[in-house]
Image (tube, rainbow, N blue to C red):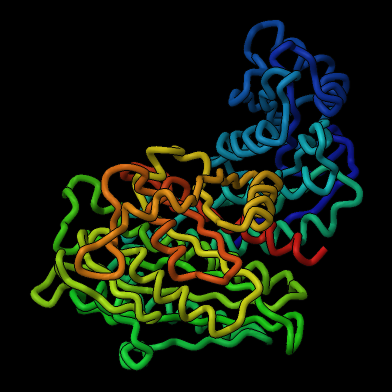
Length: 493
């Protein structure tokens, strides 16, 4: 369950909560809320600053118990870093770090005055939304760990009050986005023997069944064969788990209004196929469906917000496995569009399922198509874990998505999609090859997809670096849900 958000106008010394959060900068200056607590407690915070127990450095914290003159049982003093550099990202980090410090505490109710801090260029509503989402993200627990003796404790924190006066709408937005992020994270974190194409389809259908105005259609293998989806089905043919093409629709603007279309790559496990991946780290390939999880999470949030627009969410859910029936390097596949594709590497499978899904999306006559995919390791090399790769031939659409990323702090960085790169995809045996060589791999993948979006306003988000945290205990992040929802919200204002 997401946190219950509210706003408070109480002072931090008088708030009746289990814990109050206030901030101190590394130049030893106190935020207004910290100064209020310090005064009410007879200088408790200032004494700890003087002794060096509170440094104010970003990421640092001090948990103080039973301060005299303070109603809350605890006060968490969060380090805010350099006051000259305090911005939205610092607010988010301070909030996340504070929640992390309380992770194993018995705190059930929390209030934060960090949202009173000045953030250049941002209003109160923005600060409330960002802080609420940061807190909920940190408070998330993946409890379906399947351990015989599970050490993962459910979060005890249930409610968060944020200092503010006019942020009810912002907190309602945050709650809806948090639901979408959690929906995406839960799908991403599940093991691939459970989160297979049928499971994703069942979750989509369950959401549609529980929400008025939402419809769900699941296309089975036979329907995709009739449509000529040879690229998608080629990837699927090595797996015992049947592929699913999942189509969710939200009719928030009424009939006759062109929808926005979100398309997601849902490779529920990627072995690489015959071009098999190295064994080390292959378990992380359960996250190769996080593009699909991201567009589904954005759809969930849009419906929860009852956005006045029409929305289509299409997920190509497939498992890429290397059995005796698997597709091979050298195969030529015929896509739904009629374009033939020479397979040079079966581990470049995401673009093959997406090209048919993108073609299918066009039957809804969308005003915009945006796809999200954990598509290339090359994008991770280029941009690391901080920004998603963005490609589009439409400057206006690209600018809107970049702006949505900045507003949500779910950033994307635009990469070129010039025709110069298209020659790398030339094939002697088909219309196009599915890889373009070792250079500019993220861009040539985008160029491949662009061949199936002619005449469309289309953008591609490569979230291979941002959709999950690396390592054996890394979790799905829920990106790019915040970016996509911000983009859709912006279209309604």
